Image (cartoon, rainbow, N blue to C red):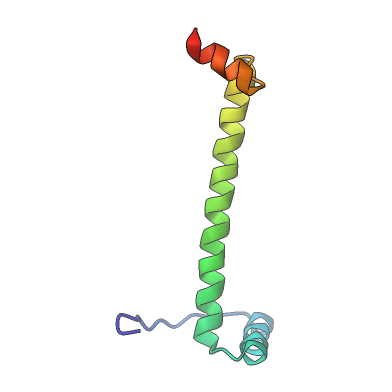
Length: 78
């Protein structure tokens, strides 16, 4: 962890208590629990972005009458 940056954060008391309990239960440091939570939040944000893109392109395909792979093949050959 040679390139770690130390930061001070504020948490509501109940959230801090929960994080500390989680750290104890998982045998991790509080920093590790916070790092895991931030990584998971980043993953979830990317998943939601992907879902948004999928929904957009699905709407675009439906608007063009592309509902199946056969429809897509026919559209691409036109």
